[in-house]
Length: 614
Image 1 (tube, one colour):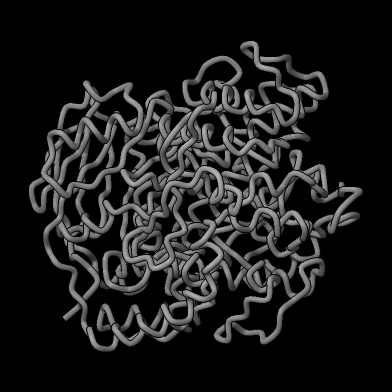
Image 2: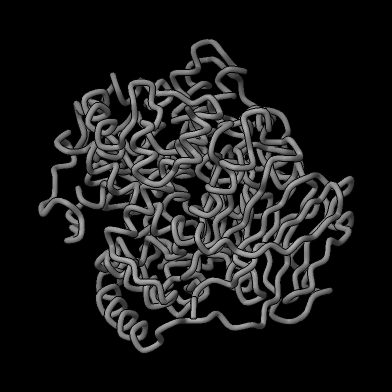
């Protein structure tokens, strides 16, 4: 038997109200695994440069991996892919949405959506029964109100994802949120759904997901959990924000739009402080033994709220990046982002950009909001304005690159992004490999689509082609290291397993190929899995080349290439990107203009991709 795959792809054309069932191409699945890999093959074949992000014929793809919904620890990932309205290139976001598990149980590996409905709709899937439903009564509702309204008309056990008012209004940093509060945050996937008048997808699946070798999988699962649990205790206790204080001490925490090196108030927004003050309970995603999720409550405060708590990236983006040490305001701003449906990282980057513009006299206070650094009221108000596309928020919701073009006056030097996507919250001055990863990531600045700083943190993987940890401040082998970690991340995302469990749990990477083999019944070595990751990455890169991206886009802001900070652990450091990029291009098989070499594409069996590019 072939386990792990449901065997069907659901095709929905909203312009024609057509629903089609397509057999999974198992040969394609073997080469591209599933998840973002299978979606990459579809996107390259069906979306050309003449199809804009908001064009009805742009695809919006929800794809599971072969390990999604299995008993593999943290096998819970659902990928959302499209051409990004924020960057114009490869758009992708990944989240631990239970809807992905139910989608597999309903008999589908993924959903490919095209077209645009004349009026708002939502899709309901109840095993093999698929319907396109009127959603006019839902349009304008926030995320959680939408879930409540759909739940009233759905069977018990239905799981959902939806967009908020930000996606409806085509805010380019709009996201898609699951009913557990997990978010497919980056690259504006919520705006693509909004452009199609698609409010939500609700799924109830009652089938079983097959596993080829249960006894082998049981042993793999037990060994992986035994390894991971001791290494992730801090995150189980205090969430992913447990790293805030440690990152400040080591120079990794972003401060004042990346212009400062120390933040004495970091302890106020550390995960341990959240645990001691506003934590209500811990939350685990499907099949997760760690439970790093937080449910928090703020009472008796102007920032009163209750719901999913901020993770590390959000804590830094709406906190230290803006010099804000008010934990309750961060929780409130995070809640507003969740309800309106906007990416917290891009929102924090945009607000920090606005605060620096204000500091330099390029913009005035907006809507009576004082945009001084560290003002918690300003941060809470600005995320609301961004989500509602009002005032200055309408400009910031376009992303920092477009906002800088609108504001002008030299504000471009304050727009911290790569390929139009705001930076994640890890400092490339501290971990030079992350500078390469941000510059070359297919979706724009990203720490999750290539995590070489795991090596620089001493988290060695014996399967990878080096046997020592490299100094984060050096440039030695950083191009090679970035290339390999990008391939690993493509493979991991495509099988559908959480990186947090594998990387931070220090689980041997062979766990991925062993689990894949046990679940599917197809034997795959780790080297073969890595090769599939390389194939996926180059297909995404080739998509970007078709969209007009070149080597000139593989860069970082001058703030990192030419400027440093005068305090803290990374004092005096810049990112020596050019010398690392040369090594990276050689290892990756790119030519001088950043295009995958024809011989490299042929070597990976990507003949059809080569025929389009060449």
